Image 1 (cartoon, rainbow over the protein chains, first blue to last red):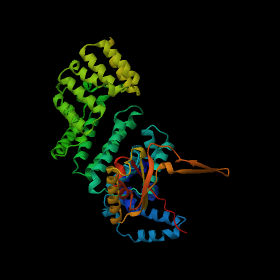
Image 2 (image 1 turned 90 degrees about the vertical axis):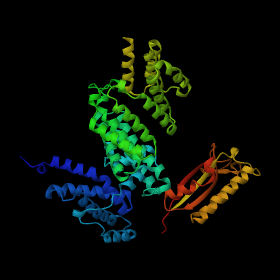
Image 3 (image 1 turned 120 degrees about the vertical axis):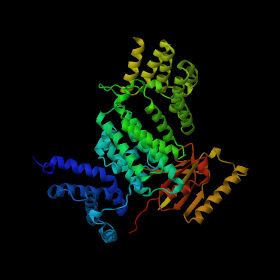
Length: 416
Length: 118
């Protein structure tokens, strides 16, 4: 039987896997060293190409990470030498060559600079879409084409987005630092919202191929786990990781074999991934004990209560309604308001909550979830005629196929 | 790096000279400017006369057009600026956030292009 390393395809996949896992670590160290994002990326890319050739021939080095970093540093010097403005860069080269602070590859211990890189990618001066793309590329090690596929845009469009982001970082002087204490919380919040955006893009599964969606969720989980390792004492970081773990644990149960969306009420709870739920629960417990409440903690706590209920009917709606009250104080958004009423409808009854819901109608003009909730309330109150009208309205307002199909199925159920 | 902070606000809603609000605003601006000077970031800074005093020029095919008014009619008008010398955008944003007009207008922060000599 041939050894794995003699099958080139297998080997290339293995190298790519190592590279992708270590990309954020390597590129962040190189940026610190070279003080130039583009040069760091290019040099690392050169090193990866060299690795493909060398490792195939000589086998994997003891520390692939160390080998790549050393090689990338050499490649960076080559690139600076080739640069037209060589004379002006002579000092840079001298500096780089003199830096013998790199340990031997076997005792690799370069400080982890990924935290700086996360804060740079998610700087509030960058558009959210740009931050998402930069984070996936620089920290996640995803290629431009992979990110483009995940967000259903052309590769060139994504490439432009990334170039625009990197240009803004450079030209506007977005620093490569962990923010100072005074602004840390605010900046961390920006990082968390970018990671959650990546997760939701995969989780809400509005369109696109299934495996790419799952990959986005997993990437968001991986990045959040890295952030958690780098900031273990931040309750909101713990909470976001917990929230993602809890949501993701229910992923398989959310769709049937045909790919139809299944509501929380109808999900087969035996499909929920128990160990992952346990991990999420213990994280949110730890976070809540720290006594600094935040939006992600409340959301994770809500998700935790759903996860703990053995059946839909056993859901502790009192607790959930209280948490939505709490969440509304932090995020006064229409979705939170709606969800709060949904929770209340299970405590009292749909009929009794209808008035409160209808009072919100002026705020929710043409807002699809409002009509979906209204339809559900009418249905549960036994007013099928009104429910039908609301379902039709919700279907008309829905911009996404899966959601539309789900609403149509719900409508058909009351018609038959 | 040098950054310019462009101060935009709705002139019609700005405090009128002579009012208590106006003198309060002046005091706030003086105190902010002192901070910029003391922290060593101040390069320049001035208020502008009203947008009514603006004259816009355009030369096309050798014809110089002189127009009364700003280049574009907007809800908020450019009313002044500061130039800061800062290490990075975070520092520039920190100082720009101290400009009193941030509370009712908008401050646009942009790096000043660095043209290498020689």
